[in-house]
Amino acid sequence: MTTDGSAESADHLTGLRAEVRQLRQAIASHIVVDQAIGVVIVLGRLTPDQGWDVLKEVSQHTNTKLRDIAGQVVGWANGRPLPDRTRGALDSALERTA
Image (cartoon, rainbow, N blue to C red; front, side, top):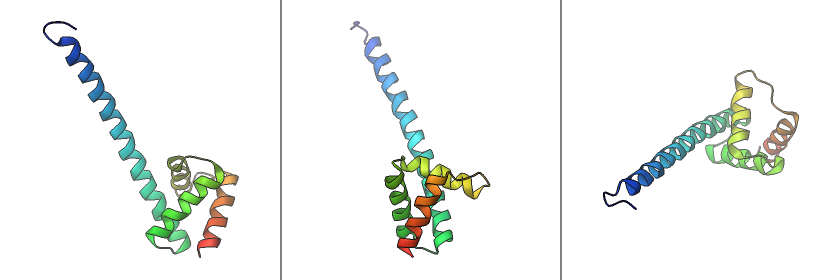
C-alpha cells in the first residue's frame, strides 16, 4: 500500500464500478421479468402472483435461468419464435394454473 492511499482508492473505485455494473444488470433483468409476467398474465388470464409462479415453473422445468425464460417470452410477444421446449413448459404450466 502506498502512503497516500492511492492503491486503496483504486481498489475501492474498481469495486464500486463492479457493483454499479451488477445493479444495472439486475435492473434490466427485473424489467424483462416484469414484462414477461405481464405477457403470461394476459395469456392465461392470471393474477400477477400466478404469472410469477408460471415463469418460475417454466424456468425450473426447462432448467433455464428465469431471466432467460423472461427474455424468450417477451421476445415471443414481440414476434420472435418461442423455443419448443419453452413453449411446451409454458403451455403445461398455464394448464395447471388455469
